[in-house]
Amino acid sequence: MLYDKVQESVRFIQERITQKPEIGIILGSGLGGLVDIMEDKEIVPYGEIPGFPKSNVAGHAAKLVIGKIGGHVVAAMQGRFHFYEGFTMREVTYPLYVLRQLGVKDLIVTNACGAVNRDFEPGDLILLSDYINFTGQNPLIGENDERFGVRFPDMSDAYAKELRVFAGEIAQKLGFQHKEGVYALFLGPTYETAAEIRACAVYGADLVGMSTVPETIVANYLGMRVLGIGCVTNMATGIATVKHTHEQVVKVANEASEKLCGWVAEVLRQWK
Ligand code: HPA
Image 1 (tube, rainbow, N blue to C red):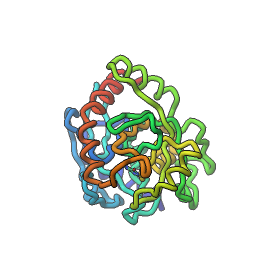
Image 2 (cartoon, helix red, strand yellow; image 1 turned 60 degrees about the vertical axis):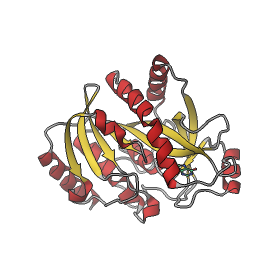
Image 3 (cartoon, rainbow, N blue to C red; image 1 turned 90 degrees about the horizontal axis):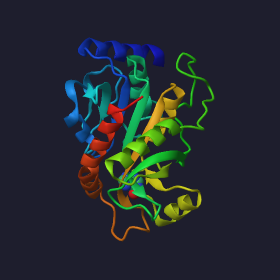
């Protein structure tokens, strides 16, 4: 049963760490640099945690790093699980159940994504304002355990407005213009076709990617507030003038990583 399995993962992690995390952070492709600014780090490789799936996608480490940023104890997931790797949606979102039971109340989720909105450009950091799930999949399909959350979770504030406003103010103080956008989830692992991008633009998408939405759904279900930040690594298919490669995605994300780290660190310093 999911609940018992989660308790077992939680017990294992609690035996390995001395700090109690309040905020969870999921680090997207090429954005793992945030762990470099963490203090008092305690590291638990996913492979050792009972119940955890295992990941080996390039650009993703596979460990849970607990430590301090801006005076808050955070649990950073360096490497996440994707549906396209063959994991089930339950597996993709399993760490969220564990983080919640460890005491994590809020989530910062980051990703590398393509821009559908022509006002965006590679290197931009975009606050996610909402999502569109184009996959026909949902991580909450199956029996519901009321100890975790309700059967029909509300998603009207999937990316908490208060956190978005707050993070936006901090971006302004740091002197960069932040933008907001709607993130559309595609399953991958193929990048989208030009026709798919035109279609999702009509639907109101500003960004496209292959992650983040499952975790956002489960975090909301578990009662967490979510702050989502997308790092634009490329213009989406049909807008871009070159073909997409994962290497280029990771390269651009790495280049934007320092800016993202500075922003997230300041957000955490003033977190309320
Ligand atoms: N599409 C989907 N996922 C992505 C993209 C993209 O253009 N860029 C980075 N991740």
